[in-house]
Image (spheres, one colour):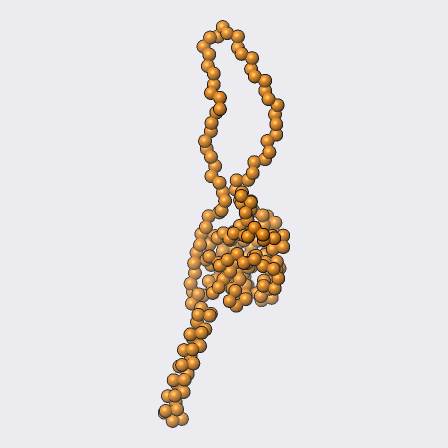
Amino acid sequence: MPRTRRRTLAVVTVAVAAVVAAVALPLFQPWRLFTGKVVDEALPGADPISMTTSSSAPPTISDDRRKTPATPPATPPTTTSPPAPPTAPQRVSTGRFISHEHDTSGSASILKLPNGSRVLRLEGLDTSDGPDLKVWLTDAKVVPGKAGWHVFDDGKYVNLGKLKGNAGNQNYVIPPDADLTALHSVSIWCDRFNVSFGAAELAPA
């Protein structure tokens, strides 16, 4: 092969490789296999306990023992007070993550807060970093192995937003109109490649 032709072929090869790299690297972001972000959020919605006490009627003191003691007031009838509303988050359902395309562990729980709102809490999450990762509540059944990698966009799902970090404890607000009777699984979903990194089946707590 003439030297000029070899040089031309080398230049074309380098140019094609540069174009492929310019397209593929931002799309696949392979360096994220070696990066990570830990997010550690507190349990939401717990109200502080008040230690303040008060008395509406101060005690009466008398030093005259000759006086006839006053007739004690009649005791009012006992009434049953309504139960106090909860002051801490109530765990409605929970489940453990299984691995799909990437090793994933930890737990997912739906919490009902004292104000009536709902939150999805991920605890002890540990998965891979990746491009365009989202947290989904879905109606899909969690299936182990490759058969369960791509099922979560086949039916109903609610996107709770971008995954805050690939490790730690995190809270995600559930929209008020989300029907939790129909949504019983959680997926760490890669929206760019339509694949689940890991998922958890939710069961009543």
